[in-house]
Image 1 (tube, helix red, strand yellow):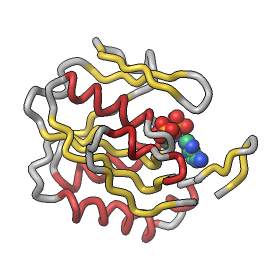
Image 2 (cartoon, rainbow, N blue to C red; image 1 turned 45 degrees about the vertical axis):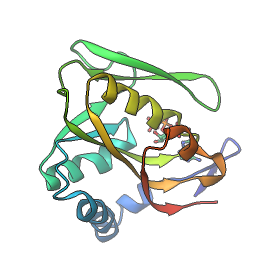
Image 3 (tube, rainbow, N blue to C red; image 1 turned 90 degrees about the horizontal axis):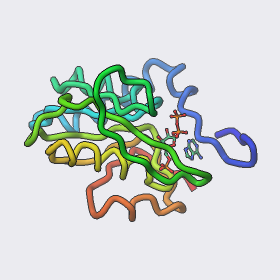
Length: 160
Ligand SMILES: O=P(O)(O)OC[C@H]1O[C@H](OP(=O)(O)OP(=O)(O)O)[C@H](O)[C@@H]1O
Ligand SMILES: Nc1ncnc2[nH]cnc12
């Protein structure tokens, strides 16, 4: 954890420097989701890509990037969401997900929950069933879990 502009920033890049710790982290998710009939792993830009892609490969699911605005070249659907300061937006390629698909949403961290909430809305608008959201770290004091409308959230560690 490092302090950045008054915020205690949870920096997962140190985890990535340790190949065994990184692999063990991915394996914990793979063990949980393998054989659960998940066809889509949706990873949230940017840090959700780091964990989402190896999980998708290992469980045999496709990987769908949920990106910040104006990054995806094709037609997209968009969802705006509130940040602690201001607003942001996530986009997903139209047609990347088919109605009825079972999706897992992956990110590195849940803080206020706005990002995961927008991600779930995109997948549900495309007709997918969001099975669960998965993050490495939860900041429980920010009560992000309460914004997920009862959708299960699996995290590896809580940071207070
Ligand atoms: O639960 P929330 O309050 O919505 O915050 C969590 C989001 O914040 C961070 O991403 P950030 O928006 O900083 O973007 P980045 O990964 O591109 O740096 C983090 O990786 C999550 O995606
Ligand atoms: N404290 C924090 N550390 C890392 N990423 C974040 N995203 C939102 N809050 C964060």
